[in-house]
Amino acid sequence: MQKSDKTAREIYYEIKANPARKRFGFGKKAALVNIDLQKAYTRTDLFKTAYENDPKQLEYINQLAEKFRALGWPVIWTNVAYMDSGEDAGVWGTRTDTPDSLQNIKFGSERSELDNRLILDKEKDVFYQKRMPSPFFETPLQSLLVWHQVDTVILTGGSTSGCIRAAGVDSLSRGYRTIIPEECVADKHESYHFANLTDLSLKYSDVMEVSEVFTWLKDLIK
Image (cartoon, rainbow, N blue to C red; front, side, top):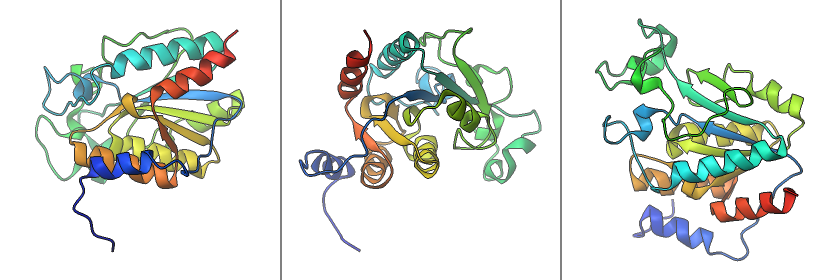
């Protein structure tokens, strides 16, 4: 095992700055998959399970969603919520049982609600409720992407080390070019956040500044 005294942030920026870093690149058509931007994870003023990295994260995501709608490309939002019994969380919900525990995000609760700062199109956007980290697991997401004939998946939301990572691995495994705008994902601690951005960048996805995604979309919108 290689050892280092550098922080996870320093290692990520070192990888990012490498001009020889290879990329999968953008394809021809993309889907925007926004993962668990619900109050339990976005409202730091209300819930201790919430986190924020870039204060403009939700603003960037709203802008991305607007551009995707203009192109007629799918915009997907996910959230997690569980039965009163918590049994649909399975073994994932067995470690703890406190008001902040995952399985205690109940259907219809404030913790389960998407953040009010998000601009949603209830008629055109797609909404999936999931139980496990990956938005592909036991949801119709794969079928939707096939229907829309997309070859690229852009991921936003959180957490970077949890659901974003799971989504990135599953997306690549299904043959999609996977893009992660770094300002649009967040985690509880910078160590988990940057370590996973590094690993995702090296193995499973293209991690880039959101400005690059906007530039790509600008060239497509006439």
